[in-house]
Image (cartoon, rainbow, N blue to C red; front, side, top):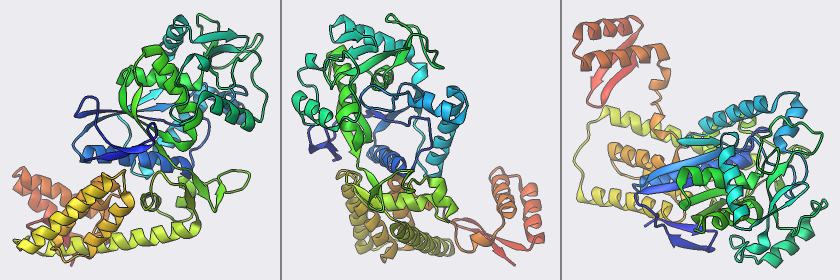
Length: 475
C-alpha cells in the first residue's frame, strides 16, 4: 500500500489513482530565464523519486513537466517585469535564445543527477490558444474582470479559494497584505485576485506577445500550468508536485481557475518538497551561497553524491545544505560504491548456489522492509539505511547484488553501473572489443569472435568466459 502526504487534506492517505493502473502526474518545471540551483535540484529529485516509486508499485506513469518561457513576473503581486524579458535584457539576447539556452542547461542538470526526463515536456509558448480558451470560459462563467493592466480572476467568487493552504480567503488576504513589498495593481478588487492575461501597455513592444479577445498581451504564470495540465492529463488527474513555496499562491491559483472553469476537482493529491537552506540561510547570489550542480562538480563532488545526500532526509522537511554534509555524503557514497564493487567482483568469481531457508527469509524481509519504507510517504532515508544493511549482510553475493539493484530502481544512484576494481583498470577500447566479441558469439559468428579475442590478448589482456559473462584481466 502506497501512502502519501496530501497537502490538500494535510494528512497521509492511501494512494488510489483515478484510472488505475494509469497515473496522471504533473510536476512544476523551471522558469528558464536563469540557471537552476541545488534547491531546485532537490525538488526535481523528489519528483523523480516519486515517479520511480509509483513505477516500482506497478503503475504506468504519464508525467508532464512544463517549461515556463513566458509570463512569470518578478513579483507575486502581478506587477513587475516578466522574468523572461528581464533575462533577455540582462544578457542582451532574444527571449527565445535565453529560453533555449537555459532549458538545455536544465536538462543537462537532470542528466547529471540521473533524473528521468519526463515523457511529456510542455513549453508555455506552445499552448497560448488553450490558455486563451480557458480565460474565455472563465469570463463566460463570470469569474473575471478587466482593468487597464489585464484580465483578472475574482477570488471572492469562489467559495473554497485557498483550500490548499488551509486558510480562508480573509486569512490569505491579510497574509498577502502584511507581506506585500510593493503597491497592488490599480483597480484590482482583492489582493488575492490574480492575472489571467496581461495586456501589453500602449506604446510598448514585447518580444513575446499574442493577439487575444481582450487585446495584445501574454498569459499569467498560474494560467499556464492549468492549461497545459488539462490539455495533457484531462480536467482531473492524480498528482501535482512542486516546491512548498508554491502552495499559497501559484498552486492555490491553479486550483481556483481550473475548478472554476471545469466544475470538477483539479488534482487529487498535491505533494510539495521542503525548502533548502545553505549554511542556515536562504540561497541568494548576493550572499554568495547560490550553488549550481556544476559548482559542486568543479569542487570535486559527484552529482550523484548530492542525490544521495537529499535521499537521506524527508522530502517534506526543510533541509540545510552545508559543505560538511556534502563531504560526508560524498564519502559515504564512495564507500558504498567500493563495497558494491567488491560484491560484484566476488559474484563474478563464483557461481550462484542454492539458498538455505534462513537466507531466503532474510532476503524476503529486506525486500519487504524496503518496499514498506518507500511506500510510507517516500521514506528514502530508511531506504538508504536498508541498502547499507543489505551491503553488510551475510546474504550470498549474487542475491545481495539482486537486492541492491532492486532498491536502486527507486534510489536512482546508478549502482548497476559500478565496475569492479579490476574492471576499472581496463581501457574503454578494450572493453568495447570484449563487448563486440560477445555480440559476435551470440550471433554465432565465431570467426570474428576469435579475431577479437586475439586483438584483446595482443593488447596484453586475458579474456575469461565465466557463467556470469566475459571477464577481462591484465596478463
